[in-house]
Amino acid sequence: MALVTTKEMFKRAYKEGYAIGAFNVNNMEVIQGIVEAGKEAQSPLILQVSKGARNYANVTYLKKLVEAAIIETNLPIALHLDHGDSFELCKQCVDDGFTSVMIDASHLPFEENIALSKRVAEYAHDHGVVVEAELGTLAGVEEHVSNEYGNYTNPAEVEEFVTRTGVDSLAISIGTSHGAFKFSSTPKLRFDILEEVSKRLPEFPIVLHGASSVPQQFVAEINKYGGNMKGAQGVPEDMLRKAAEMAVCKINIDSDIRLAMTAAIRKHFAEHPDHFDPRQYLSPARAAVKEMVLHKINNVLGCNNKI
Ligand code: G3H
Ligand code: 13P
Ligand code: ZN
Image (tube, rainbow, N blue to C red; front, side):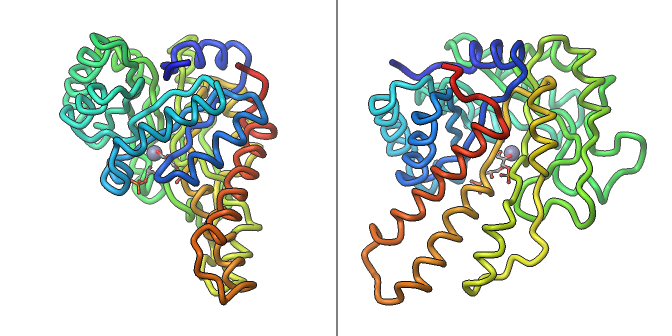
């Protein structure tokens, strides 16, 4: 099987009320942990590469590792650019063989966001690649609310945005944020915005960024073994499940991978201070990624047995 786009994945996910996990990948152990879980659960997967991941690992290594994952699992896997910040980067990923790219021009004024997203969509579509764009901004969403929508996505803008850009999916801002410290008080998401967006864009796949749930067992373990992640808090899993049952077809998870690996490695060194073979501490880290992803697929996303 070759890499696939997210087109068919999203069509079925929308119809059947589940979401596909989009997991950030930076090295071999992360990819192996994710795809071992996907194989066990028989789940489609989106493996996403950020600009930082490209710089860290070299995109050729990542692409070849993902190709190896397909050979090993025979799963439908999409290779996606996460948070592309320019036409040039998106074009490079299309030319490199990615099957999906995100152009994140959400920080730009509406018209400029439309112009850039449209330019990327035209190039990508000419090459059989699908495009995700973003409307509304995630970071600091709680601090900067100045009107009803503030930095949240304004549902009144989504039809015009999607029609004029021609993009295939839309990331929206409903209160999630990147990283491990998402809420300083009780977590709250604007499901009313999601509801309104989906009314205005029938059967159109919506994407949720910043959707790690920051499992407290990882936080406790990291803190127990010398780390300091006091106050870390993510999106409660029941909210993610609800979003997946609504119009959200892609749920982005990166921080939970980082937490799973860090907790496992800290624990390993606490118990085996004499170890210095990377295989000794990367094995439990990889196993922790697999266990976390399997839990998400089976209990949160609902994309198990959907291939
Ligand atoms: O949303 C961003 C992802 O978590 C990727 O993070 O840019 O540090 O690779 P990164
Ligand atoms: P988290 O930081 O919540 O894992 O979000 C990841 C993400 O949105 C990647 O684009
Ligand atoms: Zn993101």
